[in-house]
Image (cartoon, rainbow, N blue to C red; front, side, top):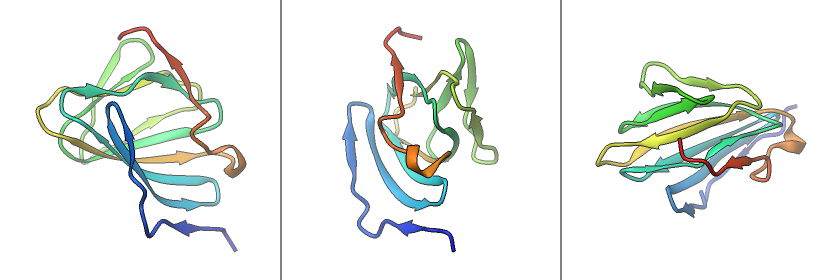
Length: 122
């Protein structure tokens, strides 16, 4: 039987760009909601132990993949971000952007420490 955990009391974690909540944890995956504030962005980053899929559910946002590929998130189509791929989420609008993010990887290695940030501005 697969181990799953629904987060009934979803703890909001505040960041400079907005906030996130873990919604659900399963065997080899985690589901989060990211809320990127208006005119804000996440850091440019990559992960050694997880891939991510981003689906926008409200607002507007873009994802920079690799160095220059700018892709608009669309409600009908998610963006897959493979392991070790540099990426950055950006909200250029005047309203919050709500994104459902799915992490996939080894359950023992799925955590917030699996992040490498590049401080250079894109």
